[in-house]
Length: 482
Image (cartoon, rainbow, N blue to C red):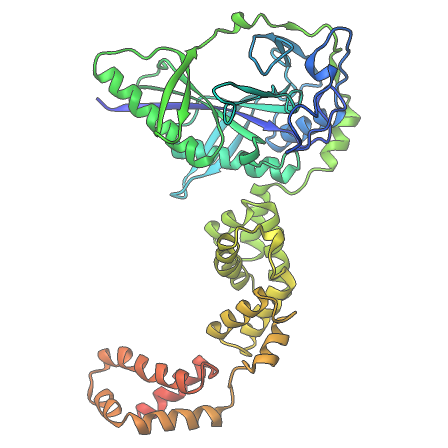
């Protein structure tokens, strides 16, 4: 039997506010445990929460970013359940009246095809604390610093059919929230976490299968591996005569498997009711319009502009806009260097490789956009060859110069473009390679191309890589064909 996977994601995004959603406690990452949680975050008797306006604004920005309906009257509810790291015994969230209604995003998949994923809604809520299981001699430690941190939970429809589609969707959301400035998207710090709802059904069947929810996966790689494992587990179970039960599962990255955590609660188990301490949030038209006017150029629009304005292909444009800082860096290089294609190649090639090797972000690059643009200018005007350009880049990276011109001057790397000087080098090489010249002239035309490479290599070696390659090829061929 041929099976089809059905996947929906619930993505939890920590909003980049300086204080928590209902209190003035700091949201800064990395503080000593339990130093950033006050009475409001813990829900102690006699406290009254106050909604963080900036968290509401960020929810609106996200909704506008996916062309969703913004619910101008949204309500906070209490979701009652007990966990060790949720001392209040309930989570303040939104159920029937979330801030963001239905929307959709369009993805570009690895094969170039397009995929539309519908979003059911996105709602605001508070994060719980964090249970720490390491280095506690068999006990669990509780850190409540995260309790009350504002979250935007983004709930998709079950529109994805493979782990790769799910990862593409998750990467799109990551790019979007970073562009909008509503989150730093740092998955290693828990700023973005994903619950994956996975089921399978016979291909062609409309009815959905029983789903399992994989909780709190925090990397693109692990999301893909967890979903693939869960798909295989459910298919094996069904084909062996078993049944899939609705449950919550955890993904173990070390064993590359999912395992049962608890049976899945139904909504009525949570005993939702409107939060008695918080009034409904009402967003007027003027406030909505003010936020609309601050919206940045979004990834899809930027990609379309890059293909039109800079004549980049879809693949290059898509890669560049995945990260807003990288996209901005590329534009500065392209304008400074005067060649967008070369700029794209260097940003995605040599620069990206060096950043990866040295574990740096593009904002930390020793070679800034102006320096890289200057290097590209010197490639374009034939001051240096592409090969020498890598030497110049190495010098800039290690701090041996403040500009490409500075390095070229100090190291004497200027390309030889004088026809007479190049002819002299070619004549010397040909005189020393008489046998190879004779073989070249006796060879068939179809074989001469490979043989030409030998002479070019010798000439570039003799010129210490400084001879202009284009001029070398032109003059060399004229002399050999005489």
